Amino acid sequence: MSINLQKGQRVDLTKGNKGLSKIMVGLGWDPVEQPRGGGLLNALFGGGKAPEIDCDASVLMLNEQGRLVSNKNLIYFGNLKSGCGSVKHAGDNLTGGGDGDDEEIFVELNKVPSDIHKLFFVVNIYDCIRRKQDFGMINNAFIRLVNLDNKQELIRYNLTNSYSGKTALMVGEIYRDGAEWKFVAVGEGTNDASLGEIVKRF
Image 1 (cartoon, rainbow, N blue to C red):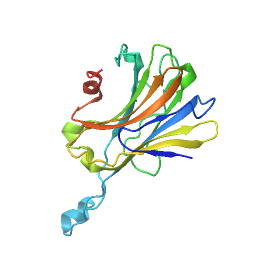
Image 2: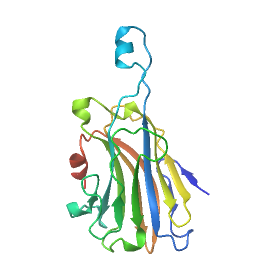
Image 3: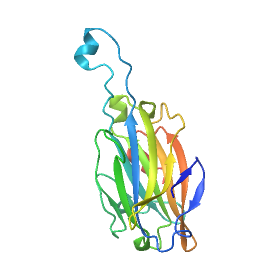
Image 4: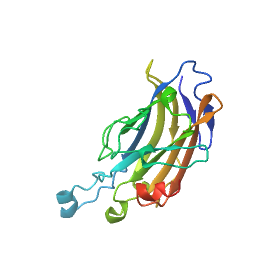
């Protein structure tokens, strides 16, 4: 049975799920529908159509001090697989259209190197400054974790806060706790304009 989390809440992943290793981390979002207006311009340019917003999900594989020690430990649309093979990105979704997960990241916890203590999941809006886009234009953002062995959803965190004016989201974190793995719902918005700016935090 899936656990619905609130911001800041922590939950055990492996302790209550014996043998859990292969998981899918799904991230999703929907563009906000624009209000329909009358007139010729709206008829010509599609008033009410949601704008295409290219959100990108990424994972930072961090050491015990929370540092990103190598760009090879940054998994995103430009680097779809970690060097160790424990984290794989399924690829970029350019519009956020459609139901369900918009981007999927696959993790094998048993393969994560011992010097990696945190898998930090972020979402940013590509080219947000030029396109004048922010997360106030996004609805229904979520992260969910699925056990790939039985396809059961373990955890879901719906980001219900207002992120208007924010251009990046620190979504959640899978982290080591002794021999076990846990998940924390982070849900913090930032004004980082690119993935490169996010990386500078780590």
